[in-house]
Length: 488
Image (tube, rainbow, N blue to C red):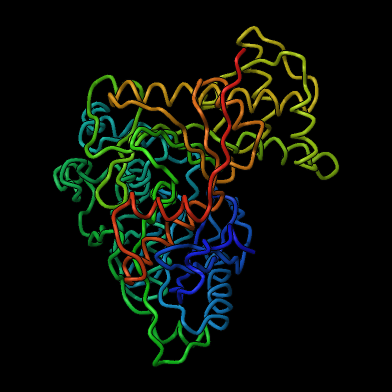
C-alpha cells in the first residue's frame, strides 16, 4: 500500500530507503519510505493496535507489546529491503519510562491516568503557574511531564531511577543501547528552557527533581547509534550490514508539521488524529501574557522552528463514543455513520470540545449530552446526531483556534492545512472551511510518517534542502484535496 505514486520525473532515480516507526495513541505503524530528490513513496509494512492496560495502580501503556510489534515490523522491513539505511521513531509526547542500570523500573503511565491531579497543585506551590509557563513556553495541560515527575517524586519512584526516557527515546535505547532525548519531544516536558532549548537546570532544581535523570539532548537529523548486535539478531540482519537509528522529530506532531504540503508561509496547520494540534509555525516563541492566558504552547519543531499551537480534543471524542456504543451493541460501521451524520438536517448543538471532562476514557455520549444541556441546546437523539454534533464542535474549535493563533502570533493566515487521519473526514474538512472562511487543504493522511521519513532521508543525503524544500517534495508527490468555504 502506498500513500501516493512517485512523481514521474523521479521514475529513473534509485530511491533511498528508510523505515519510520510511528506510534500513535491508538495504533502503531512501521512504514518504509522510498525517497529521491523528485518523489517520496510509502509502503506500509505493519500496523498494530496500541491498547492501554488498567491495573490496580492506574492506566499504563502496554509498551512491551508495542516494542514486540515494532521489532516484528522492522524484521519484515529489513528482509524485504536489503538497502534499508536507517530507522526513525516518533510517538505521542509527555510520557516516559523510568530506568535504572538500563532496566525499566515499571510500565509507563498513560497521560490520561488521573495520578497527576494532586501533583499539579504541588508543582504550582513550588513554581507558580505563570512562572512555569514563562520558563517553558507551554500551555497548561495536567499531564505534562513535569507534573508526572512530581507525582513520581511523591511516590518515591524518582529516587530509584537514574534515567528517564520519553517513549520514542525508550524505543531508540532498546534498539541501540544509547540514551538520549530528542529536542522536539523534550520541549513538551515543561523542563526545557523555551529560549535556549536546553534543559532548564534552575527550574528542575526548584521542583526538587534530580537533573541527572535527564539524558543528553540531540536534534532531529542526528544519528543516535547503530542497531545493536542483539537487535540485529532479532531482526535477522547480517552483522556487517549498516543500519542506524536516526533522531527525527520524535514528537509525532513535529514530524507531521514537516510534511505539511505548504506552498506559502501564511498557513495554519491542524494535525488531526486522537488529538487536534492546531497552530502556526514560527521562528521564535510567543511569550506574551495573552498567549499564556489563551493556553497556547510553544513547542520545538524540526530545524529550530517553533510550533505555536493549542491542543483540542480531536477525534478522540468520536473514537471513544464509538467504543461506548460497541460495548453495548453491534460493531459500528464508521463510514456509514459519517454518511448518516452528513445527512442530518436538524440543527445540532455545538459544545466546548476543549472541556476537560472530555479527557478521560469513559461514557463520552453521556458527557456530550451534559455539555449540550449546560449550553441550553438540544441533546443529540441518535448516534448520527451525536457524530454531527462532535464534527461541528471540533470544526468550531479548530477554526477558532486558527483565528486565535493568527492574532496572538501576529501572523497572517490565508489557508489551513489539515493532515493526519482527520484529513480523510470530508464532513470535518468542509465544516472547518465553512466556519473559518478559509480554504482547507486536506492530506497527506500519513503526514507523521512522511515527516519522519524526510528527516531521515535528508540526514542520509538522499535529499537536500530546508523545510520548504521538503514540503515542496510532499506537494509534488501527494497533492492535497481542497475544500473551499461555502457561502451561507
